[in-house]
Length: 225
Image (cartoon, rainbow, N blue to C red; front, side):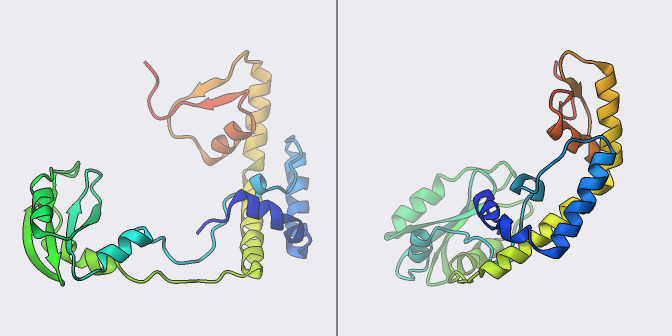
């Protein structure tokens, strides 16, 4: 899971006191300034995304999971229009079959579903290309597993922010010389409006465009008509 910007900002003062972070930031600030780039404070934006190990998000909402876990109901496991498996629960078999009959082929050129009762298939309508019937059957127990409860301590959050900060500072230090050259290049051009850059940008150009939108705007892979 990812920590919110608000959480990062709240814990950042404590992270900023960690000796390793102090050293990393001082080294970054020195190289950044030497490359002619403006000062950047140690902020949530500079730290970047912070990932914290934790359980995968649940497949179904809790009310939907509980209903899908009810073995007295008929469970329709189907391929949605987005190409992802989903579950709908019914009290009557005829209602499940009626919904099954209305299912269309998804964007993946596959479609349909199966109706299960007590783990057994009681009705099916499948048009498969890459998937297997077993994928539908096995999705029900997978989607209805009890969600794991994981307690994350503040110490864990602080450590995750520290690692993210040090990694991003190291990354920016490596990119600083190239970003500095880009800044000098575009400043010399004296453009009245941002230059639109087509194609896949380098990592340095990506960062440069975020820092100096007045110079460059990334235009994707294809030029606008």
